[in-house]
Length: 307
Image (cartoon, rainbow, N blue to C red; front, side):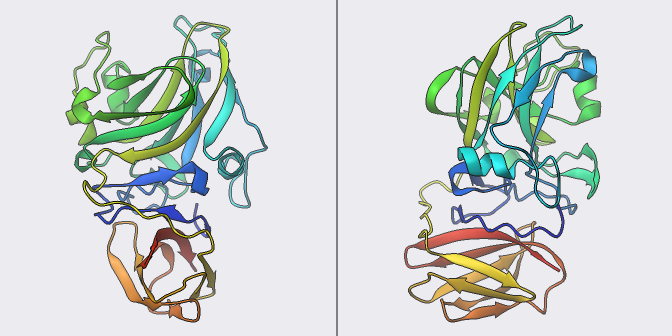
């Protein structure tokens, strides 16, 4: 995901990135800014999975072709089209001995390397839990992934919370303690324990063979998303443009404060900006950063790649 410049404005709460986050598909945000990236710059990107490893033939059909100039599997076009991650699914058991499934997820800290590998865990306990807004034609679940080795060790009896089917957007917020195992696995782990070593968050649809339907995940956030502090949506006219090492702004009606943060939430550069002012980024290293702008009626962020 390196060398990518995302222009989507995002609503942020005024709180620590590691302890609170939010993702809004309607704002064309292409990744979940977890604040827990492991340095590979791969955290938070949506991906799909299914039951093919065990002989299933379940699949998701997307409303538009996938891919961007950096990855043929990127879900950016889907998010632009649906205001979230949406698709239609067909569950086909194939040679499975259990109910077929499909799913959508994101990695909390990222993969082992910048080019892939297993998802690595991170301590997400400060989030307090997860909120998800979605529609789905059948009952689904929100599952906590612990990484390949730990998932296998507990017999894939991962802590989860049930999500009822809903034709209209439904928000479900669950504290870590509310995530429970089904009980059929060979190892025990609580939701609180899982949150302290969390590799991924997964929206899973598992039902009878032949089940079909549609889904749309439109928002996710931490449950402890800055209590008492209200996020203010950025004006639609506000934009930021990176040209070389110069970051310029448009649509800001009064002077605002801009911060350039790394993916660990550290402020690397800070300054006053307006529609006629810009930031010189020549003093920071190449990499992925979050630009956050706050001012009168403005509170938005944007991911940039500095080359």
